[in-house]
Amino acid sequence: MGGLELQRKSVMNVNGLLSKDTREDEDGNGNEEDSCSVCVAVKIRPLVTSEQEHGCRGTLAVAGGQQVTTEHSGSKHQFTYDAVFGEGGQEASLLYPKCVSALVEGLFRGYNATVFAYGQTGSGKTYTMGSEYKPGKQSTVGVIPETIHSIFSRIEASKDWQCTVRVGFVEIHKEEVRDLLIATSGPRPAVSIRESPGGGVCLYGATEMEVRTQEEMAAVLEMGTLCRATASTGMNDRSSRSHAIFTITLEQRRQVSTSPGGSTGRGGNNDGGGNSARGMRSSRVMGEEDDDDGDDTGLEGDQGIDDYLCAKMHLVDLAGSERAKRTKAEGARLKEGIHINRGLLSLGNVINAIVDNHKHIPYRDSKLTRLLQDSLGGNSRTVMIACVSPADINFEETLNTLRYADRARHIRNKPKINRDPIAAQVAYLRQMLSQARNDNAALRRALADEGRDLADIDAGQAGSGWEYTQHLKQHNRELELDNTKLNIQVEDLRKELAAANDRMFGLQADLELARAAHTAPQGAGVAADGGNESGAATGGEGSAGAPGLPKHDVLKAHIARIAELERELRNMRQFHSLRRAPSCAKSERSR
Image 1 (tube, rainbow, N blue to C red):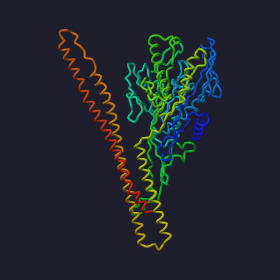
Image 2: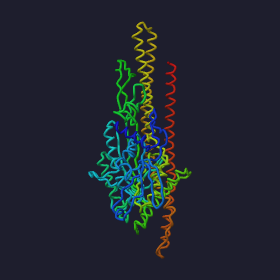
Image 3: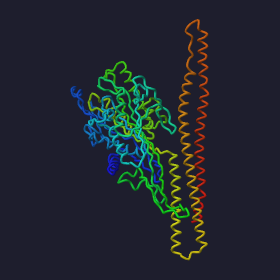
C-alpha cells in the first residue's frame, strides 16, 4: 500500500494533475479542503497505414511532456496540458498511473470520479479507454481494464471492510439512452434521466449488476460492448455510433475503531504505509473485568463506528466528431453523425459557459451533458483525455480538440465525500457514548488509586465516591438505551424514506403518462354509420384522462410525507442534543 501512496503523491506534486487535493477533517466528516480543476491529458496516436500511404506528415510537436505545438500552412498554436502521452510525449502506458490511479484511490475515500475520452472519429478513444476489453486477452490495454484490476486489488487488500460493487452500462444513441445490459434482440426499454433526491441526476430504469470479481466485471463489460452501436465509415472500419458510459458503483460499510482516549482514528495506525485515508481497521479494546456487583462502566469491548460510503465512477467513451465529406456517411449513418455532432456541440457549449462563468449552464441541451452534469463543475473529480491524430489531413479537427481541451482545464469541480448523513449521526452518537465510557473508567482508576494510597480514608467520603460512581453507571446505561432506541428509529426512518422515494418515482411516471393522455388530441370516427359510437368512445377516452389529476394529489401527499419524515428526524436529533446537555453540565460541576 505504501507504493500506492507514493504514486499518488508523485501524481499530485510532480505533474500537478489535480491542483487541489481533498482531505478528510479530523472529525471524520470528510469535508473537502477546496475545489479541484479538471485534469486534462492529451493522447497522440501514431500515423495509421492509410495516412502513411497518402503521404501525410505530422503536425504536432511535444515539449517537456506537457506542451503541444501545432504547425500547418503557416498557422502555429501552442497549448499546455497536465500531461501529454503518445507520439513525442510520455509513454502511453503511464497514462493510467499518472492520471487515473488517483481517482480510483479517491473512489475508496467516497469521492465520485469521471474519466472521458474526447476527440474526432478514428483518433483512438475506444482503444485508450479499453471499452472492447475481453477477459483473457492480454494484449488489450486501456483505462477500464486497469481500473477494474485496481479496484478489486484494493478490495482484496482490505478484507475487514464490507464492499459491494455494482456496474451499469448505457449508451446514448441518437439522443436516446439505451441499456446495454439487457440481452434482447428487440427494442430495448427506455431509460429516463431524472433528478435524484440527494441532488444530481440518476438513470431511472437502467440495470445494475452486482459483481464480486474482476472476471465478472470484465464479462459484463464485454456483454455490453457487443450490444453497442458500431458501423464502418470512410475514416474508421469500426466506428462507435453512440456515447457509451460504463458506471462502477462502490458501496463501503466499514468500522472505524475508537481509541482509548475517545476519539476516532482515521489518519494514524494505517496498514503498512500510505493507506491512512481509507480509515483504520476495526479493533476491540478490552478493559477491566466487571465487579461482582455488576459494575460495567470500565473499558468494555467497543463495537466500533459504522461508516457508510457510496461513490460512483463514470468511464465514458464518447463517439467521435466527424465530417460527412470525409466519412462518406449516408442515410442512417449520416443521421447518427448529426446526432453525435449535436451532442458534442452541446458539450462544448457547457464547457464554454462554465469557464466564462455564465449564470445559466445549458446542461439540458442534450442527454450527454445532462449525464455529465456532476462531472463538469459538480460533485466529481474528473479527468479528460483528448485523443488527437498528428496527420496534417486531420489538422483542423485536431486543433478544435486541443482548443476544447485547453478550455476544460479551467473548469473547477467541487468534490465531496458521499457519506450517508444518518450513518454519520449514528457514528457521532456512538463516539459520545465511547467518550463517556472512557471518562467513567478513568474516574474509577483515580478512585482506586486514592483508596490504595490513603488507607485511612473517611467512610463518608468513600460512600460519596461510591454513590457518584453508581450515578455514572446509571447515566451510562441510560445513554446506551437512548442509543439503541435511536438506532432503531433511524433504521425505520431510512426504510420509510427509501419506500417513499420509490413511490415518488413511480407516481411521477404515472403523472407524466396521465398528462400526456389528457392533452392528446381526440380521435374522430372512421365509419360514417358509427360516428356517434366513435364520438362516445372518444369522449370516454377524454374523460379517462381526468383521473390522472388525483394522482397528482397522491404525489403531493407522498412528498409531504417525506418532508414530515425529515422534520421528525431533525426533531429527534435536537432531542438527543438536549438530552446530552444535562450530562455535560453534571460533568462540569463534578470537576
